Image 1 (cartoon, rainbow, N blue to C red):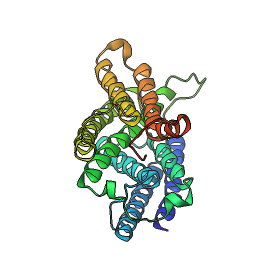
Image 2 (cartoon, rainbow, N blue to C red; image 1 turned 30 degrees about the horizontal axis):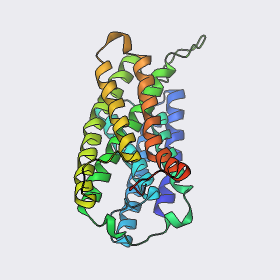
Image 3 (cartoon, rainbow, N blue to C red; image 1 turned 90 degrees about the horizontal axis):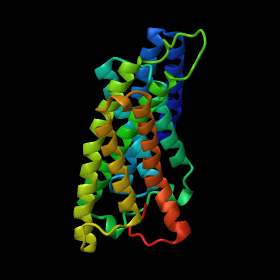
Image 4 (cartoon, rainbow, N blue to C red; image 1 turned 30 degrees about the vertical axis):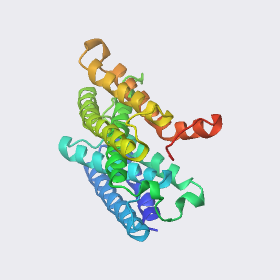
Length: 271
């Protein structure tokens, strides 16, 4: 119930950011920030409640993972907002959080039920591997939302000053900072996953479809960190790479399990 309440409040926060961007009213931005903080607290409380009821961290299936990603996006965004004193990217960033929660709520009832943890997942490496990876994914979601605001700067509009968007320089600095934040977490997620695989399956790396696409995701963001220093790749091109990177993350998280089931590929990963 708490998670559903937090989801509704999150919609209100998103609308608040939209109104703040269009009107420029400072009080609307402050209200949107407070509403986002309230939503985040409710959602985290809901996750803690689910974890207590289940007797394990809520990281055992796609439903719980989607809830965690959505919540982490909010936490990271609020930290960025406090550091940069910039709220005009809020609506687009919260859009990615809403997408994550909406995906969670579309999961079958069997995934949403609280069930005992499978024996294969009863390991400290579950928390270390999944949580570090999700922090990286959430950071990339925040970066994609900010990158979309940068791309909107390039959309031709006649007779309208874009005061409802952050400046291009501000957007670029923020999205680069968040990518730089997420990359070490994803790297740590891959490292802990390899150690867990060695303990569970007797090998660090097996070119499993999930492992392969996680590596592709890691290489994509490594490319972004390298090309951001090149003048010709800054601005809209870099923003487009970051948005595309978010779709690589989505495919790694949602598309790979679907592909495994559809094409009947061999995979040891449950989700």
